[in-house]
Length: 503
Image 1 (cartoon, helix red, strand yellow):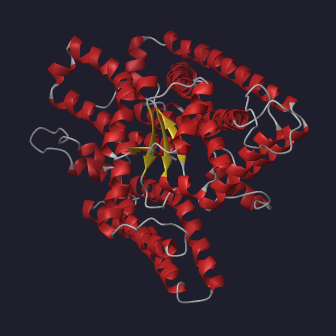
Image 2 (cartoon, helix red, strand yellow):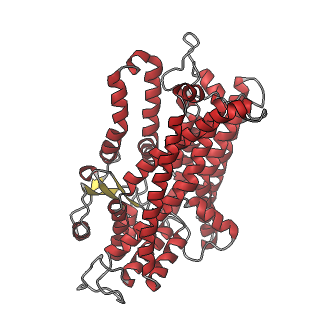
Image 3 (cartoon, rainbow, N blue to C red):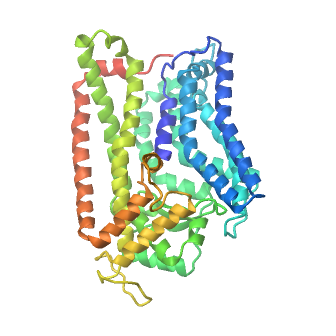
């Protein structure tokens, strides 16, 4: 969940007056309580990893059971890690202690990059869990039908850390760097050229980011074999512009594919080694078609526009609400209408918005890309039974074989990654967990079932495309109207409500 994770890490580095410890006034006591808390999920990871190793000497049933426990825990780790950090900050007072320890006693200003001390428990849990994952994954790799060589502990840890630093932490570092420069060099931060470059920085970052990832993560161009030539022919036929088709080396640990880059000359279609090895031509072509759908329907620029409107709309609405309630609100509410509570409310509402509204839009766009993936491998016959080597492909019609190919590709992705498949999410608890895991993409069983329904009712595809267009237009209009509310708040009131506390 990189989007939610990036949001939470950005929130943790904000200049907020975090609450004091509820377990005692001692900074050292707060630090030890936080340390003991974060060791709990790490211990569970190591116990399950050792259980996987021990099951290697037991029956096949015990091996599958241990692998299922381990995979289930890995799915829960994100939520457990976030919960641990919330408890550490709001119960054990770690946020306040971290900022106090990161403050220069002579100048009463934070040291450079001291904001990263607040989410430090998250980083510690993650780094130690990678060691436990290596213990389990190298055992599970012995049972996989793969020719890849499993990396050493150091190689595995560096690989995980490098991906995390580039795909998650890079925007965090940029944000903290801006705070550091503003704090230590206020005169420079006030210059027009600095403000202008700061406004252009996000655009430049989005353009250059794919190139950095390719270079620093050692993504290599796909070999010039028959599969690449077929990919290139499909991209040309579907009129999708791109820079290159890349292979992401994971030693068989990750089966995934994605497209990255907004501008064509820095746009890459990336496939992991595991997914290329495990999927046949029909399935992998459908996966490519799905990623092409994100480009054809402009999903990435649309997400950026909506997220930009969203942040302005939420902050503007909260500011207006606070200004309206301050002179007339109930007495019990007035003490809460201050900078701290409004900032925390902004974080809570943005988090809920991302999970509910943006998740809803993202799932609809994923289904739209599924349909495009099916169209990319469809023929001109709307009633075909099977494709042959002489079949002419055309995206003008969604044929049954193309839809089945996309459904089989999704099911294979689920099997390769230990995710749910058709008929595996019976019961309220399993369904809830399935949606929690796939809040951004939607459960695979729901997506697969929808593709089979389109075979029976082809008009569902047209209705869904129209539905997405209406959703996007309505959402942009509503967000634009809500954003205009912030203009009604005076500059003095806005600064009073949302300006950072002085050091």
